[in-house]
Length: 272
Image (cartoon, rainbow, N blue to C red):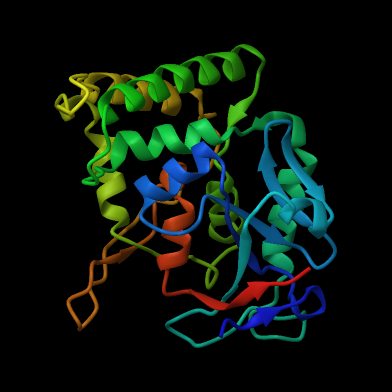
């Protein structure tokens, strides 16, 4: 039986991961390899999340209304065992909430659409599931996403993926608040070597490797140079031989990456 979490059980700084059921959400989940397609952060009074109109704060109920289910994760630093807590805690939530508040105040600077997350995933991940005409589907996704990036750029907006927002709230909060991502070095290599992407053949007969490289280049160009990037100084491999734990390239952090982080502990499924 699943463990249920109600709103009074939530702590400021908790991460919410959503299981969306739309067509795009299903593709996000497929490419990301987990059950989640969206992410947000709870501030203690509201949900802060990246949406089409920018970074917004809204009540919990309307935020989760469109999801089939939403799971709650809490930050616990794996090295120290410290859990994010109130101001009296060794790891207070205030620095994380200050970042979320600043993103919300900069509301008009950002915009997010699901197609952007899907395009990032389609460009950096490979799917082995036998889906007819996958190449054609991905090519259409990349073309649509490229149009979205161009529209946002022309309107003075910066693309901000939902899970990137959550990651940045922690990464920019200071020492002790890093959400480490397994295999983040792969995203770094992708970001650093876009020109090496080779065309990907598919059942649909459409090569999309070149389109993926072009999308990623345009996506990165649309990010403001002043926007902080959390880059790994070194990877740390666990004794078990698991993939290295590193800081991630924030632009490429996905809901699935947040789920797999050893610094986020699942509490249960939200019941509103």
